Length: 167
Image (cartoon, rainbow, N blue to C red; front, side):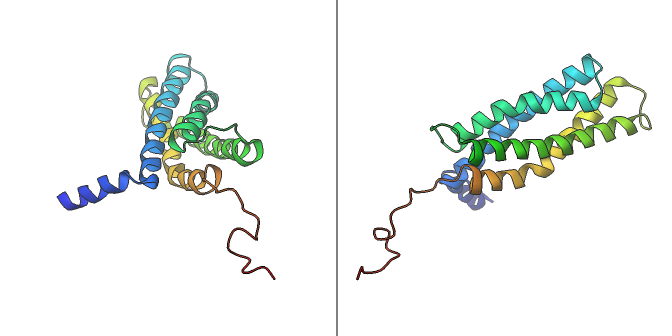
């Protein structure tokens, strides 16, 4: 057990490990923000689960984008609209659709379990959270391998070693 923990700690200090740890921490922050907003809109304002979830996800996605880009992946240059911003928001939209469906489904069926608005709120929040949990791993892979992947600048073919000896 001690050996495994040492291996995990060693791996967490690699580039990939740091990215996963930071991505996880950004996810925790995003979940906290989203759940607080969902609690506020559904639990206190009594909005529908659908509208509350849309509100919570849209607002929490903004700091998530910047924290992931800057802190987890270390990108400091300007955001690229087609390569970063639109794909990130596309994934956020997928999460929004899936979590909104889950929250709406939970609200529609919570009356079978309870008549308490507090318990219904907890069920709706749990459904939204579970939906994002399902998408979490896939999102990390896309962010890490596609959106925020570090790509060395392309060298001309004559200088990158692929072209062989010039004739």
